[in-house]
Image (cartoon, rainbow, N blue to C red; front, top):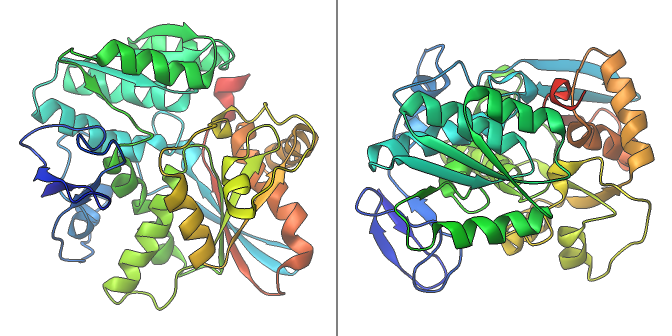
Length: 354
C-alpha cells in the first residue's frame, strides 16, 4: 500500500508517513493497493467489501449499507440512496471511518478539518471513537445545527469568514504541527470509502443508466465513478453509468471548466455543501463527467426549495444540498430516454438544518 502521485511519480509507503497532498508537486495523491475484488457475506460494510479496500477500520457505528428506495416518476425509474441515514447524518461517514482509523494508527492525537458542516460532524464523531481531539474550521454561514452537533459530540468549532477562508485557516494552522489534517477535499481514503456506495447499489439493484450527484469538492462523484469502474474491472459490471454533476449558479467551477463559460442564474447558497470554489481534483471531475457521457446541471435556490419540499413530502428528510439532485433531475427529465434508471444520492440529513 503506497501513496502515489500520478502527476510527478512520487511514491511512499502508506503507513511510513502521512501526506495530505504530494510533497513534490503539491497535487492530489492516490492510494496504490492490491485487492481481491471479492464480496463477502457480512452485515458490516467494511467486512462485506474488504476485497475492494486497502484496510479495515476497527471501530464502526453502522455506517454504510443504507437503504435504496425505488420510485417510478414520469417514464423513469429513480433509485434514491439514503445516505443521510448514516450515523453522522451524511455520506461522509464512509470516508471518515477509514480516514480516522488511519490517523489513529499513525499515532496522531489531534485532528483538524475544514468543512461546510457535514464532514465536521463526521470527523468529530470518529475522532472521539479513536481518541483524537477534533478541531473543526467552519464558515460562519454554516447551518447553526451543524455547528451545535460538532460541539455536542465533543469537538471544537472555529468560525471563518467563508468556505474558502476555512481551507486557508486550517492549512496555516497545521503548518509545522504534529496534527492530523484530515483534508477530505484531498484525502484519497475518502474516495475509497465513498466508493462502497457503488458496490451497494450494484448488489441491491444493478448498474443504473445515470448517477446524479451533488458536487462540492467532487469526492463523492469521483468515488462513485471509481466504484463502478472497480465493479467493471472485477467482472461484476459491463458499464459505468453516465455521471451528472449538480452545481449551483453561485459556485460552478466544474461547469466552467467543462463548458468554458459561466452561466448566470439565481443565488444557490442554500446548498452549502456544493459551495466549493476551487476543488483540488477539478481536472479529474471533469474527466469523469466527459468519459461517462455525463453533464453538469446548474440549479438555483427556488428550484432547490421546491425539490426539498417535495422530497420531504415523499418521506426523505434531507438537506438542501441533497435536494439539488432532485432539482437537477426535474430539469433533465425531458432529455432522458424513457425507461432509464437514475441513481439519486441523498447525501445529508435535513434535521441538522432546522
